[in-house]
Length: 261
Image (cartoon, rainbow, N blue to C red; front, side, top):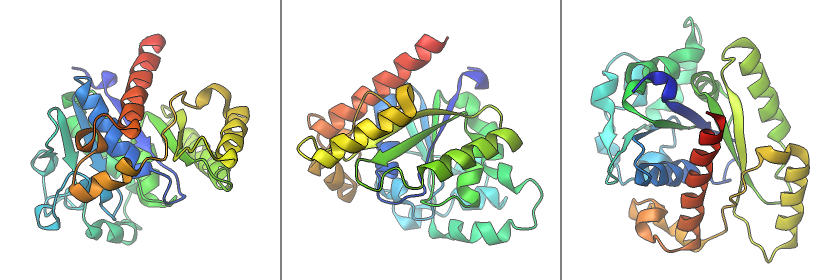
């Protein structure tokens, strides 16, 4: 497998609580279920993606931070998950110190890209979970990725901050990574009984047209319950509406890529 066929996707939104980590965990699980060899890189110091697979803190001594600091080899830091074909590079709160530590380091924007270069040939899909900010870790993820998925909660303030993220994406494209593009905006926490959700959905579609995924992630209690059991929702309850939506999103992305070949 050549690295040019590896889809490297950052999932980012500087607004917190929009379903970013939930999307990484469950979309990656759905891709693995579609027989795609998949890796998650947990680049958020909160480490929620790692927690979402039941990886305890004492199992995270070899993590993204220790790789970037040169303490550990990338391959020994990769952990298998309970999902066949799905691996993760976990993270720990140590990662939050990285921004200060890299201030004077040359090419500090490319640390995650360098990590991926070592292993990309082993995977069909690599998903990077990012912190809810536009700091150095998010910039690293955008410099490493070939495309960006933006989860957007269907609420009144949804579009606030999105223009800033689009400006950052343009900046990265012009200065660091001309390969990156917007794969799509994913509407999350959608409640069809709520008129605001419908209004926001229409507003986003008017702004971004075909860059909005057809699949919409519903507000679903099973999605929010699953992480407390250390499982993706697709394992916790395969038949719930949230699981069905993430399976549909994986299918939409795979079909989208077939159309581009």
